[in-house]
Length: 370
Image (cartoon, rainbow, N blue to C red; front, side, top):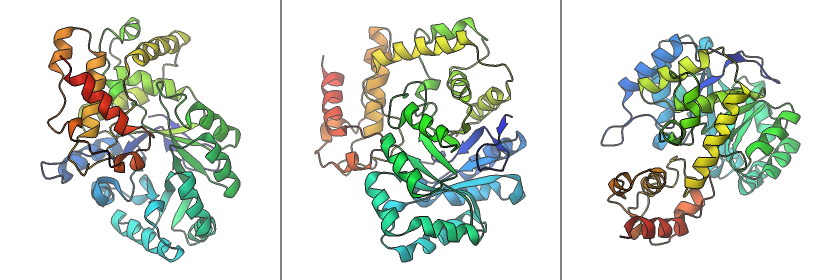
């Protein structure tokens, strides 16, 4: 397992991080705890030390599920990352309550990597209003927080403001070889690197889509090691950047976990030829892309029953299909875009800032035409 120690982070942190936003659930939406336990057991035995969750994941059940999976292991053998839901905080007096609930759910007395979740310009105003920077310092002094950071899907200029406001120890951004210009993208990575702030990566596979590329598009990868998965090229591309400390992956199946462990155990350096192959695949995928949805499901549930991520996945999948028969076989989910009432709730929640209402109209038009 690859490890890195960067910036103010004194821990030797695994470059592969275990994300808990996409745990498998049963038909009633309950997390399948046995599956979580099995995955975490393999992850721990394989040397993964970074475990990421958030207050709001899985309707506030992710933290407890993660804690249950980590229960058999000594607290010092892993690091926990959790995220404060700034958008839910209504006053400065509520901050301690949120942190105490997070600690209780995680069954721990401290959080190693504490993030301000999904920072936006609007949420940053709340951070300043509620003096959250000073509060972070107090919680560090009390030993309840070890490192303070933030996650962001916003313009890179907000990174400048955040770093001027508080000496954050790390930051989490979305980055993959398809989204180098997506906010904050490579510009955000470079700003954080210049400021000596280690970077955590989310959505390295763009919601899993970069692990499931059609073979004809992935042709440039086939001249390399045949045993490497398509997903591995995404991780290897990211590992080429030295200020990336940890890459999160929402592994909910054992084959995904084992494949990622294999990738992060691979000592073969990334070659120029491999990077060029990634560029070729990216260029081809960009010509097929309809909408940059990662399937994070922050937009759900839709008040009118539209399966927004399912609709966008079908749209993208059909665009990537090579033959007419394959294209026809890919259909919209039963909860289709035709039910959209343009209420706008989804757009206010989308971390990718997708114009969902317009995209659903286009999706429905293209997917239903004869």
